[in-house]
Length: 54
Image (cartoon, rainbow, N blue to C red; front, side, top):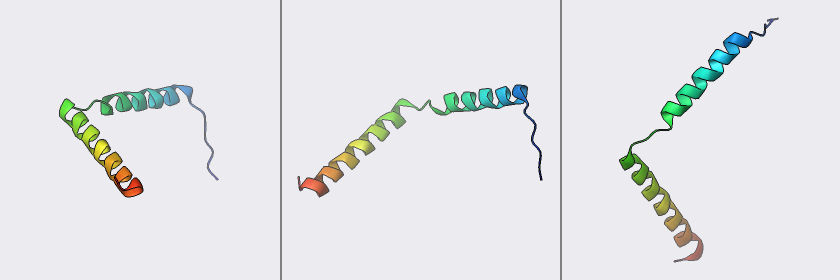
């Protein structure tokens, strides 16, 4: 059986590094943003076309 110890300093470091990774990964280029928006618009269009026959 494993025993675990609570280390608040290590936990804070892990949380801080996870937040830094999340912040860095949220930035995308402008071109990628518009490509993503176009994909979403196409998916929405396809959905309505299949669902309602537009």
